[in-house]
Length: 178
Image (cartoon, rainbow, N blue to C red):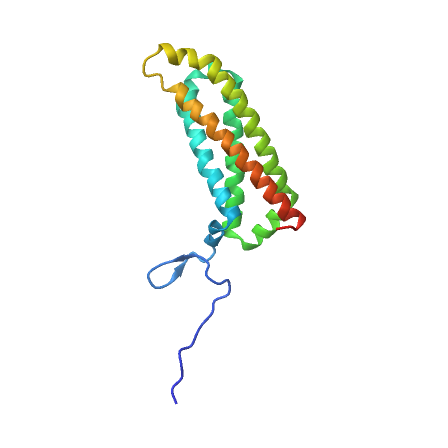
């Protein structure tokens, strides 16, 4: 009598990264990136890096022209980016963190404050860019600062709306509506 194949199950399921014949880094739960909250957090991080790089590469030499509008934008992008990165890292390295953080008031409040901060700082930066840099753009050939910072505050506004949507979804999860 022959015995069939033996199936060995590992606690934790399909965690980690598939290599050619085994799974590595089983402490990571990359399946979170396939869910809506994981994709939203990843999008917030990617767009945040893009906004931050535009602001730092093109705006720093015009800090005296733009005043505190650029500083508030960079501050908003930096703290939101850092916190979103920490939340996503908690999601990836701990399955418990997703349900604990998502069902807590922290993530709802963070997303709400981030949405307000992005929308207000992008409005202020948009005003400063259009008042102070647009005239320079009209008379200076190859002036790249105006289009770059315009893209930064427009993408930042979209990011503010994305944080508002995430706050709404977090609130629904917090209240148990899922």
